Length: 281
Image (cartoon, rainbow, N blue to C red; front, side):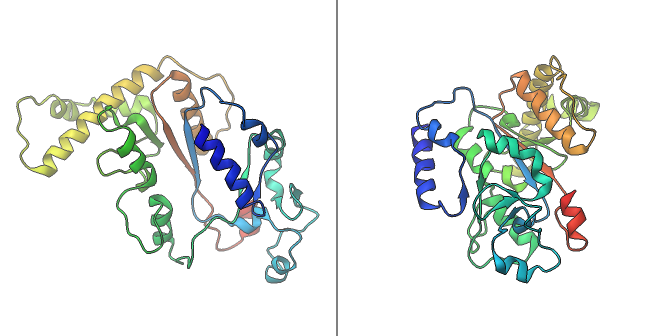
């Protein structure tokens, strides 16, 4: 916590012109915030338009280069002298004003690649533009923190496929949509027979890896299902798929599952045409 406070203080001094820091950070310097030990990552997939999200509404160049697409100054939700929220972010304004939210603006890397695929690799691995890594930034956290502690459930992505971000060299997270469905799938006849195969020597590295992954998945699914089935949140959520992901995450947190990182994605930000209505939605 001490290092975290020092980082925040230095960051505010170094990048005061690009960060919108709420007043609560000053109070945090003397607080310990006990119990906040879960990280929930929400990815906006597709390449969100940052300039139309955090709008430089006093910048003439912004309006000169975006005569049709720019957000009119009178529509912007002003949160700083020169920056404001897209009008669709109005529901987040109260969170910002209360100090529960901040914006780190103008984050990027030199000589950005125009390929979506390469850009996503850089984003997921936390690499420089000249590095090619096979592990994700969260996967490397798992390698450093969770080796030997058992279970792939320390990082859970609410999806059918695990993102590169959660893949480490020795440890990786797990992807699932629903604890019950995962449990039922991994306790089908085929998976059950494979997981219970005793006395089998797996000399082939790839086969041994698959058996190890299967065993970890079955163990994690048992643990998650047992813990989560006793909790059913009563909060009202919208009927959208993204809201369903958040509801699942909330239930897992409430159940006390020993998961440190949750990962969810909201798609639809690849707006090549008709961006104004699509981005607003």
